[in-house]
Image 1 (tube, rainbow, N blue to C red):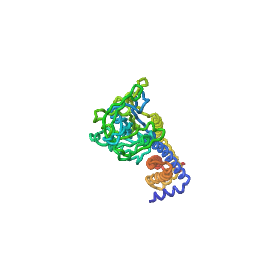
Image 2: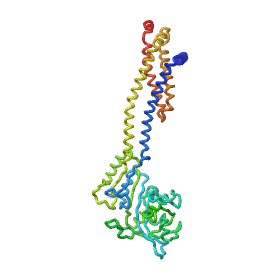
Image 3: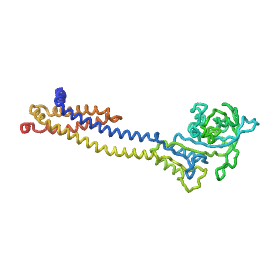
Image 4: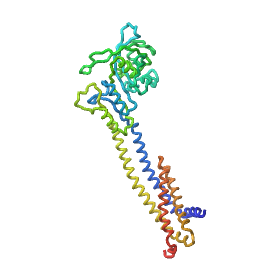
Length: 413
């Protein structure tokens, strides 16, 4: 009790010295907190960089100048989805003629049909839906979520759901309503060497129920499909007819962009060829395009900053320890007459050391705690605890040294 009481009396009596020690603690914890805060912030930015700068991957033709209107085999789609992608959008195109029910004898309408697994594949048309977008997404996913290739046998026989382009209805003066069932004859288009449609091959007949409508932006009217349906349903129709569906586009977002090298190695193993500007190009979709330029640039800068900050941690620790040792040594030198006097009066060495270390620990705690609100992050308490250990150790050594000296030196100093 006497030691603790005297410790606080000494702090109060030597205000200038106490203020200097507390100020040193404040600056040391503040500086260390800023460094660790910058490190923590950069690491957080790097971990979340994929959300800020998504890395996209898409199947392209051999020259890399075409991402849509391709002929992509189902095997190639499976390899693409196995690369570790998320939020992917896959499309396939078909053609047909359509009417009301199999018994319809009126003139049938030619349609351009697109199958997809997500409404995001329609983003380029800037569509407005006659229902909630989540409902439209559920229709196009076919109730199978992301398992677009897990086509069930019953998919081939069931009536599919589709969304109809309002422009298509208006141009033909049709009065179609939600719930109407349309019979459709599906056709695969044949293309000439100039990528023009040169003919059609009949695939099968099926039925589609109108689940809703969508309207496209005027500038997208010529690009938009007349009908959009579930990709799994369309693939099932082709598969039942013994005519595998060729997909027209596939893109997705790399789930873990910090592992890009592993993804690229996996793509090479899956035999996705490199882009070759000298190749014929055309419609076959075999190559892989990864848009990682901006991500790599930003990630490289963050990694460089993190590396430098981590390298600085060891010198920072040595610097704080060294300055703390010097501060403690000179503080003890300033108080050695007081220490010698107490020893001559018969005070125990352990009590003197405890008092000196306790004073410095209290001042370090007060000064360091005052700096915590300015450090931010979750590292402040840890820094303060580490700093207190440094202060106790660097104070303990000179305190023991001076208490072990001959107290009679007081008469020679």
